[in-house]
Image (cartoon, rainbow over all chains, first blue to last red; front, side, top):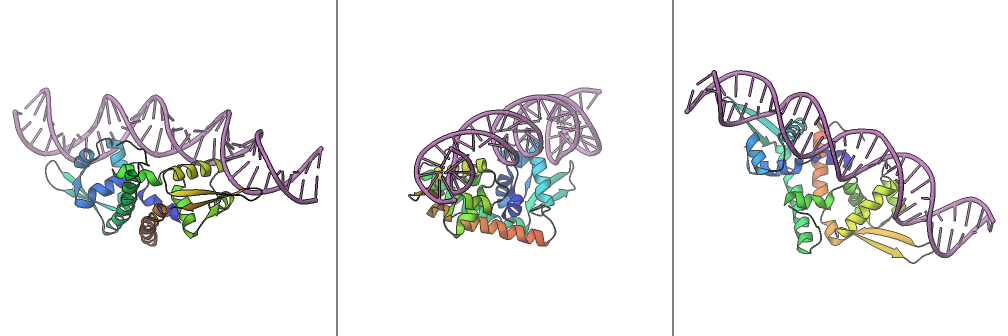
Length: 103
Length: 103
DNA sequence: TAACCAGGTTTCCATGAGGTAACCCAATTC
DNA sequence: GAATTGGGTTACCTCATGGAAACCTGGTTA
């Protein structure tokens, strides 16, 4: 049950993608810049998974060359408070010097 | 930043362990029963990581044979609303037939 | 004296997710 | 006609992670 639900945000960089989209729509290459270590392969995989899961929407705008925008769905936006809560705990732990991660 | 904070709940079954501890202290072998597919190795790894991160506390009770209880710290309990939020979204997606996971 | 318990630890192995880098396509600009 | 741009896809490799199963330790009971 929990396992199943956690699958919504599973996969490398998935939470980051959701997080970057919280401010509004973003294009493929913008996301690559927002999340520097992500590769095109993984970003595209993650975006299609998240789209398939109904968390993200893909819009193709008929410009030339066509540009593609990704944005959170309403349901996707419901994940933001969850990520927020995790970030808060993360900060507290960091303040205590626990949580020894790099970036 | 987010990446760093997400590390708090990283590793297989980590969210499940936290989730199982939400009702109160639990012993090693109880957790193995609560989360059937977890192996002793992974459970013990996860418990020590979570303890190190300050999310879980380990109590050895001087019985014979000594029993060990694990319980959420105050900080650990702050993760519960986050997991809750994710579960809620998971349920909505499931109701829509998206999210094709097994268990 | 042998077996049993809790609470792990150790060894070994396979797998699959992620990283790198090269490539693709069509339209546009130089 | 060559290069660029956006938005990817493909092929290949690697290495960390998790699973399985055996083992350990010290006290207890049969």
